[in-house]
Length: 251
Image (tube, rainbow, N blue to C red; front, side, top):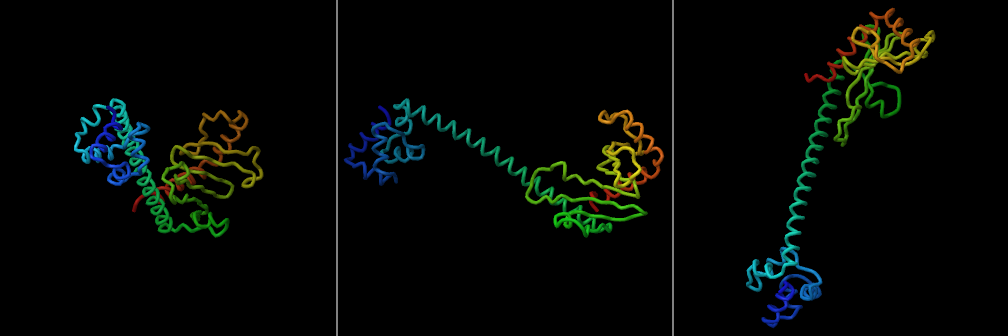
């Protein structure tokens, strides 16, 4: 006997109308009618209420309805699946919240260090740059950096890493860390340049050999250019690395 027949049988046994049973279970009369004709089934919470109301064990109520038993089993399985999914989502969200908090803490530290070491917000440029672009002059060179606001973003994109761009006369270097140093060649800085572009160099200001995008002619030209001005580039690189450490290190 399926659960719908059991509900109907026990309702009629007590001489209850569908309307009355619906009120007791806090559902509509049509819902009770659908149960009794097997159109659909009560949810798990309602099945427990029906068991208590008719004084029938859950085992008896479910065991005699193989379809309902499968349905309950399926629902329990789905509930377990949903709990796992919700737990995973909660863990991911917690991780994102922690990551965002960390990014905001780092941003605050960087700005405090910039102020401490005498960096100034750049007076020119668009409003966004005015709030986030910093500059300092030291020993005949200008140093520039940009702090990307963390805001509500929880993902530590590459842009959040602090780089320092240094310029002294015609010489420009962009320093991310000791392994990522770029020298920029631009005719706006040196009108006598034969070629323009950017190259990767080491801490000594020497051209890194493995740069396939450079032609042989450009590679030879940039290598010679760097060698003639090696001391200047070395100083800019070392000073930029030092200033980056001042920015990112907790005081």
